[in-house]
Amino acid sequence: MPEGVIPLTERTAPPTAAPRRTRLWPVLAATAGVLATKALEPHLPGAADYISSLGIVPSWAAWAGAGAGVVAALAASSQRPGKGARPVLLFVGWTACVLLLWSAVGIIFDAFRSFFWVTGIPAGDFATVDWPGFLTRAVAFAATLLLARSTLAFQRRTGEGCDLCGLRPGERDRPADWLGYTAFGLAFVYPGVKYYWWAGGGIGRPDQYTEGFPVMETMLLVGGGVLSLALVSSWGRVYPFWVPFLARRRVPRMLLVSCGWGLSAALLLQGLIPVFASVNHLLGGPDLPFDSGSANSWVILAVYGGWALFGLALLGATRTYQRRTRAVCRLCGE
Image (cartoon, rainbow, N blue to C red; front, side):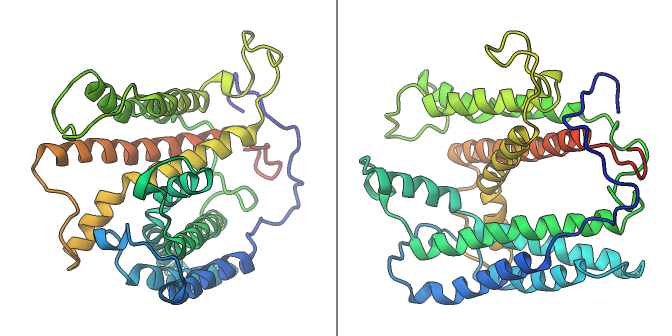
């Protein structure tokens, strides 16, 4: 363990334990679910097109992602593949994850629209939900998470690290605090744009901009910033002395891990929208849903690019936190 790091659990893996494997059936069920929901989507009631018409997601992405996901999941359940087969199987697995994530783009809009639909808060057209599309995107997102977990387990199990934990010597101590500090800095990008508009700035500002002080953006800034620093700081493991009722107690490990993964996923799903739209356009899809070169497009690039980079940095910081706070492996001592 690196100096100053307090393990969150004293439980250690038995020295003769077999390498952990993810269960195959949840991954296969999720990928099959993507195929089923995609096939049923045109026949289900309640459709409302606010994603497909933007040309962000090609119609074939879900089919290709689910098909490749089945192949990758079956391959991940195998024993040790040959040296030449391993990189091919990893390529198929991570490609399937990207395609399924691409198919899930728009689920954040679905979630917000569902919130207004359920609560009845006046929101105009934003309270209309594309229920068939929401179902497909939700299943695709679940399949992305399960397949990514399966592929990562396969990658670790068949790599050069420990047969039990997958870590290589010194990997736990590898310096990566810069990811948390980078995520902290990127947390200011989107709120900064809103603060600029609120203060009267005009670059890229919508003509009918009537929002007041950016409350929600401030909450995202505070929450995301605190989480980013907690993942790479000592007070992300033990509550500092100034926290009422919890001072000097251990921070629940899964609290930060769950928040880190959840926020990273949300940021990437939103931040990659212009990237996916551009790729779809290059592959022969419709024109981009924004005017390239305009002031508005620069704001879109800054906001969505900031979200994507924020998500990637936070994802890296979360993985580092998981690696540093996991139980010590008695097979390799890492």
